[in-house]
Length: 287
Length: 209
Image 1: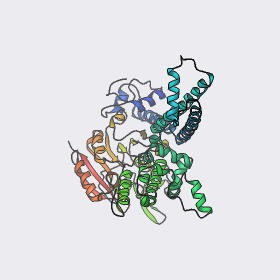
Image 2 (image 1 turned 60 degrees about the vertical axis):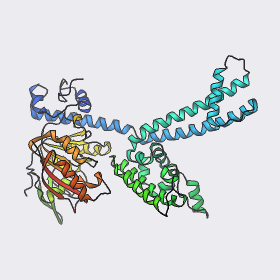
Image 3 (image 1 turned 30 degrees about the horizontal axis):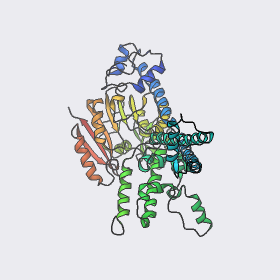
Image 4 (image 1 turned 180 degrees about the horizontal axis):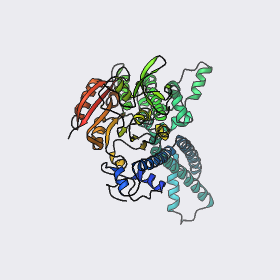
């Protein structure tokens, strides 16, 4: 690439609109220069009017392409990823429990969970040379599968942590990428999340409890998935209702900004922190 | 105060308001070829409506930082010369592209105003920098973009107090921003944009040598 001093049209064939747009998008310079005059001088444009006409075409094309690229990291991809992660987590746990039950009957061990399945799978690799029977091989293969599914869930989580801040920067800032993705997924997309009232956001993921409340005498749920947020789960029981109401309020504002404007508002975090500090300091001694 | 050429007071039904001539973009009221420049929706519009000495005559080459969906920048392009519109968020830029489509002198750029090196290869030296960025460090953005201004150019900025610090008194925030601005600009005039925009300060400044 040429150095930091040339205009967007330097070395570009005047008839190659794609190349010009590419330079608009990726070029750099330390400071401005009399680009219109330079372009005429170097023969890129016949006169100033011609230059501005070309500039208009190139900026329109470059900006259109840049917007499309930025929007491709869209909320639908995030919804698929977070649902796939949940499936992998659940399946890995289910398989790991089956492995543990089976292993208990063969080895008399009482391990459990994905960690135990992983351990079994690794053990299989170590003594592959020793003659095992078919049952051992089947069990160890299943254990390896369970560990593999758990690995897939971890990779999906890493993918969500990378993508969510691009799709919903403010929501991810307040809720963390994974909870942000869960909320988007439960609402069915960023747009529908942005359109939900904050009271609905507060109980997303607690639909069973909500309908038990609506149809019968069950108490209303105080929180849905937002319970996983430290500001709810880490708050004293008596104040959790207020905490989740306040958090849900800020989260729905964040979702609306993310959907309708897309710019970053670091101030939201400060507002939330301040509100939480006030809720937590209520009712006497802080733990 | 005189309005720039191409901007006129015009009656729309019962209300009189500043207006420019161009394609209708955001549902504003129109009368013939004139379209209302709603000061409630545009901070630069509010600065003109409040009679601030913007130094605009019409026909200026302009760099507009924080163009968003193009509400204000479409009016600027109506009475100005070459107009470079920088906006960082992709979603509103779709509408900015629509506004630029019918205006051959409006050049949309999806760039970060905090990183002028990423658009200095496109933007020429300008007469006016208009700044309306809702981010922390608004004075820093202004000083970073000083390189685009001619010696007697103008910075027209709308400073949003809540972007700097939501908890502080806006008056204190404005003092801080203006003090920081004074390290690279001579501040000529400041005025609160009430009643059109709450907690915003309009600033007219000239780059220091």
